[in-house]
Image (cartoon, rainbow over all chains, first blue to last red; front, top):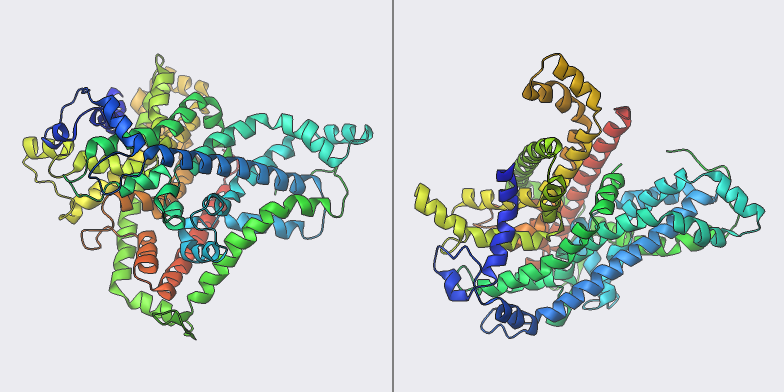
Length: 268
Length: 296
């Protein structure tokens, strides 16, 4: 068991260590296994973008910001959009409801990776390349979240609707005053999952951005690695990697309870 | 479909207004592109994008006549089977231990779910760093202790090992959590009964826990296949970039390479369509199975 843990944790430990050394110390195989004394200057260099001779030395601080905005927009957008559509699907009867349900369902089967080229063209035609809208909007529709909320709404007792109607509350009043507070746990769970999803997007931002100041950090780190094996400034690359891992890791570990629940529920 | 509500609101326009944001995004960014892909897959574009020609199924025909594409199929198959089998068995072992452990369970679980939070591209970077031929720690250890000259830039076996390792590592958390949830939902009384009958822990695992986990395992198998097919693009782009040659270029990577680097939009779209068919098949498989096996 301890062995398993070590294998899983080793890559992370190594990244942390490497980010505290100079590039020269790492280039001498085997690299040191204990923390070195260059932590602060590495991180400062990376965040400020004074990386020097790397293939790309755009400031990582800016990338972190782009990542954060993108991830938050995707998360909040997804949750809002799916809450609304799940509400409509569960609490209303209207013609073509079955068709709408299946239309959303089918999107589960079309991950971005499958339809990259045509989606790219649509976004380019709309003039959304290199913008936050282009980075986020195509990823906001979410069948998974819609289904999670739908499942949850179906478990809400019908008496609540009847009581609300008797008290003269309209559908939106019911939605905001009763349904939303009840959904808190599901929202928290989805928040974790979608935040990670948004933060870790790679292929889409790679296509949708061409200018350095719109790279999310996950794409930025890839661009730093163009120097080949020993040409890379590994200490700086690893410092960036640690920075890129930090926010999602914090979210997962701190919100572990909701995360585990949400993950297991989403897939049911 | 699950039970329906019998107490509902009545309004002609409100449900459509509520569905509008989702519907709009889906129409513009899902159905329209998917239709475009279908259309393009049957067209041929000249290299300047000036004219288009209807070619019917020619793109598909040349696709399946292309040995490089068939190789990519093979690579994908090898890669995803390796990732699914290794990933599932490793995380099952970890979950069985985590289920038995009493002290430090929370710490153990927290450590194991961290890879889930790491972006695939970053995971790729971490693994490349460990295995970098001239300075990577693991490459050094291999050379030093096993006299193995590690070079994933030249040796395609090494390259494949590297991407499988990175992909498995990234997916361990997910599998682990599901196995753990599955194990913990098995009634303790079953296991205690077997223990009283004299079954050793190992025996109990094979005859009780593993069979009861089979729905979870099957579900994870499908999920892992889908993961290996699609979500590993970033790992491959950050590590081997499909090389050496094109020995680690899986299908998704090839769609990207041909469409964006090679400029062959018709061919790339045809590949997209093939991929869509695969996903749909996998999803249908999963749902039919889930529906058959509702009672655990």
